[in-house]
Length: 292
Image 1: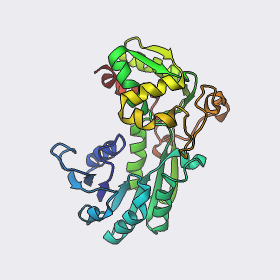
Image 2 (image 1 turned 30 degrees about the vertical axis):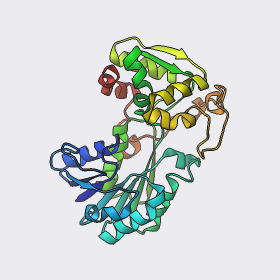
Image 3 (image 1 turned 30 degrees about the horizontal axis):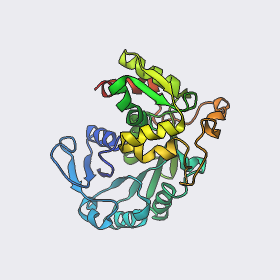
Image 4 (image 1 turned 90 degrees about the vertical axis):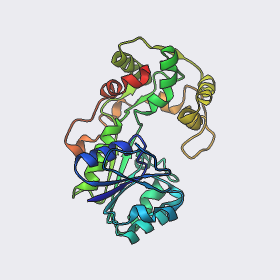
C-alpha cells in the first residue's frame, strides 16, 4: 500500500511515518521543503504545501491512503485532488474538541470535506497532547528546573502522541475503521501539579512549581515564542475556542469544574487492544528533552 503522510514532521506525523515503514508500506512524507534526513531511509520525501493544493499533484500520484493534517481553508480542494488521483482512504488528524462540540471552524470543516468525498474515512480526535507540556514547560525546566503555572490544580487526560499514531496507522492500513471517529485521551486525570511531579520523577531531579497569575504566565509564554506564544491567549483563558475574549482568572470554569465524575475517558485501547500509555511513560520517553 502506498500512503502519503501530510504533517510528516509533526509529533504525530513522524510517528505515523516510522510505524508505516516498519510495517513495510511504501511511504511518502509531504514537506514544504525537501532536505536530506527529513524522513527515515526508504521514505520518499515529496515537496508540497496543503495551503497550496496545486503543489500536491506529484505527491498524490499512485497513493492509496492519505493521512491528512487539518487545514480547513483548503480541505475541500485537497480532498478533491486526492479523490481525482485515486486515493481511496483518508484518515484525518482531527481534535477531541469536535466530539465535545467546541470546534466548528478548525477541524470540523476538514472532517466534513472528507465525509462528503465518498471515500473511506476515519477521524482521529485526540484531546490534550502530552507534548504540549514539552513546548510550554520545556524551556524553563531546562534553564531553571522550574514551572510557572497559573492553575496548578486544573487538569485533564493528556494523551501520548504514540497512541494517536497507533490508531492512525491501524485506520490507514487495516479494514474495519471506515466511518469511525475515534476520540483519544490519556488514561488518567492529572492535575498540572501532578504532571510536574511525574516529569521530575522521570528526570530524577527536583522541579519547582511556582504559582503565577494568568497575566504573568501570558508574558512568560509570549517571551518564550513558538508554540507557547502562538497559543498563550487560548491556553491561559484569555480567549475561548472560537477566538472570542474570555475571563483569564484562575477561577475559570475549566479549573472549578469537578472532572472526577466523568470516569475513564475514551483512549486508544478501544482501537488497539493495548492499554493506553500513561503520562508517566510519556515523561520517561521525553526526559532527555527536558534535560537538554
